[in-house]
Image 1 (cartoon, helix red, strand yellow):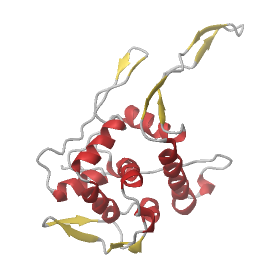
Image 2 (tube, one colour; image 1 turned 135 degrees about the horizontal axis):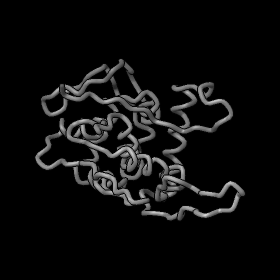
Image 3 (cartoon, one colour; image 1 turned 180 degrees about the vertical axis):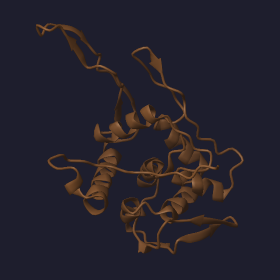
Image 4 (cartoon, helix red, strand yellow; image 1 turned 60 degrees about the horizontal axis):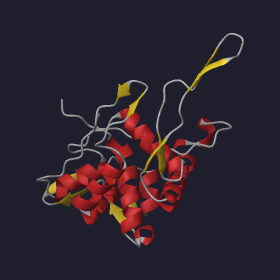
Amino acid sequence: YVPGSIFKLVTAAAAIDNIPDVFSRTFRCEEQTIIDGQYITCEDYHGDISFGSGLVKSCNIVFGELATELGSETLTRYAEAAGITSSISFDGTTTAPGSFDLSGANYADLAWAGIGQYTDLVNPCQFMTFVGSIANGGVAAKPYVVDTVTTPEGIPVYEADQEMLDRTMSSDTADTLASMMRDDVVYNYGTGNFPDVYVCAKSGTAEVDG
């Protein structure tokens, strides 16, 4: 599926690691900007906006500009580290690999790719595994369908293997990204929507041709 703005988590991780002053930057969002002769549009007018607020408000201008600054090689490396282009096999199932292909992309295409559009495709299970790695200090956990099976008498007859997969990012980057996702909930989605649960989140919508 086209990921839309959830992919901004990947772009954010790359920016945290590779743009030293990203948290002190101020971006300008006037609902659109021109990159490489093409309009990059945003859903809202955000005016002057920071990197952190850019994730909270899901500003396309912030992440489009960050993507072009990071470049295709860096962004591809982080997409691959997130597992976007890989498959996971578990419980007799193998997920379909996603796609992140910037070959032949211009700067406008790169901007849209960093926003989660262009030719980006993700497998939902794979991306949930990536998001889980943010909560787990940057290391992904292998998914499973059933945790345990017991008899009516409570005797365990099956227990899933709890296996760790690859590291998707450093623990520091994961902690920073988790904090930004917590701000998403506090200042955007509303903690009242998740009573008694500590939630860190990032939503996303995507435009699909046709």
